[in-house]
Length: 218
Image (cartoon, rainbow, N blue to C red):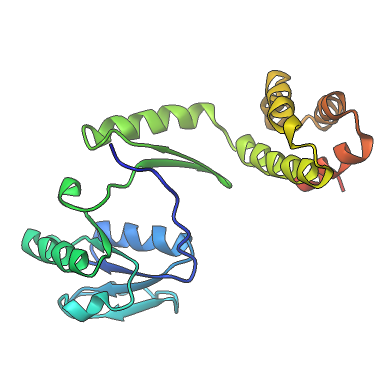
């Protein structure tokens, strides 16, 4: 069983060896996470890349791991990928291997994102395809309204922390879900949303602030 976690890679240097389709996907995901990326491949993509990408148009070398906190071996050559993983381990750097995930230090789950909400699904390497199919099934049920719901949940948590009433957080979130808040968000039912929030919080000012936090009220 793997150990699931979310890494804060903002401003951290990561290595991607291989600029093919797989490597470019790893690059895009790392950039979306705010990481700095060192991209190594004899044939780098022609596309203009952000300034946060350090391009090294040559084969992989040991020094490419200098100052790196996370690495991906994503070339089409198994021997190169094996060498990247081996050298990364010697330096204490976790390395994922695209061609043989089980031979690397971690495997990436199938992910579904709705704003700040991330749903990750893994099968311990038994069937990545099943993880993708399950993610796609969940995507049909978790629409864009869950991004707003996550923002609202964050605003509610801040309100209750400030008021010293965190014992209500779970209770109120359960009440909002049972009251169909996601359906009201999906339908852009502002009046219904306000009525539900007011019914749960019994606080007009807090309700207004919560609506403002998700852009439902100016």
